[in-house]
Image 1 (tube, rainbow, N blue to C red):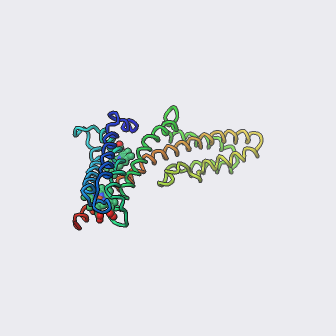
Image 2: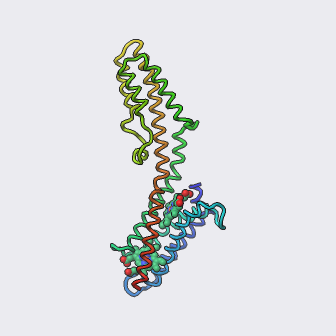
Image 3: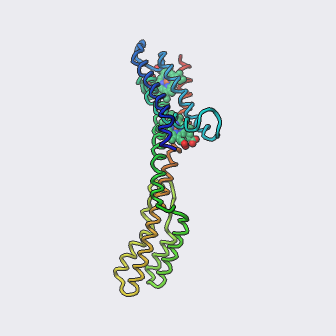
Length: 276
Ligand code: HEM
Ligand code: HEM
């Protein structure tokens, strides 16, 4: 869906965005304002109005997404237009400002707009990249009921460790009870756990297997094989959680920043008319 929105209707929305950009640039080059170009010339007002209209339309996408089958445009039209018109703002709003930035609410609105566009660009990238990586990571058969698999492996570990020295049994117990999956935002985004109890058990039991001899060495080596499979599965689960977190996280910026942008924009427009 997200690759296809880029080519949707034979790039109709890319063409519209490019046409708007060409007209805005030409008008900017041709127009001859008194003094430096700025948001207050006839062109400044026109481009500002155009940007504000585009921004309100882009923000309305949040409402449109949740209503099915209303209006003439398909959801794909909205999504495709969203991306290209959103990106075109970078140029049109910059021309509107006449490149006059300062420490004021106008520039705050501009900065928020750039942040919304930046987070949107990441979102688009995430939607195009991570679902595929997710299915590669999951492998041929879906991960399936991974928790049942992990629990099964833990049971096998206990089974083998029962006849081994206590030091091994304790590690297996830790690996079962202390292994954490998921967690806070950073842990999820990092896709790994540097203190994973199962990884620790695997490393230590591997060392012990070399020291043991006879039956114990055989059992410890079997245990290493099961623990290695468990760690491999845990790594895949953590990667899956990481991809899912990357698919979600940007919207936590995109939506609140959109709200802040609308607020700053309202103040910007209000103050310029106040001082008119
Ligand atoms: C209906 C929409 C808009 C109107 C009527 C409008 C109006 C204006 C006016 C009159 C100025 C000149 C202010 C001055 O020289 O002191 C200005 C400047 C500016 N506008 Fe807008 N604007 C609109 C939309 C936008 C949008 C959508 C953005 C970007 C998100 C934006 C960002 C800026 C910036 C960065 C400046 C330059 C500020 C400065 O001169 O220090 N404007 N705008
Ligand atoms: C000022 C510009 C923008 C505004 C105000 C804006 C606002 C929004 C809003 C309100 C939503 C709906 C979120 C939801 O409710 O789930 C949304 C979704 C989205 N936006 Fe933006 N956006 C802007 C620019 C962009 C840009 C430039 C891109 C990409 C390059 C982009 C990519 C996306 C994507 C991928 C979605 C999710 C679509 C989906 O879930 O199918 N946005 N945006």
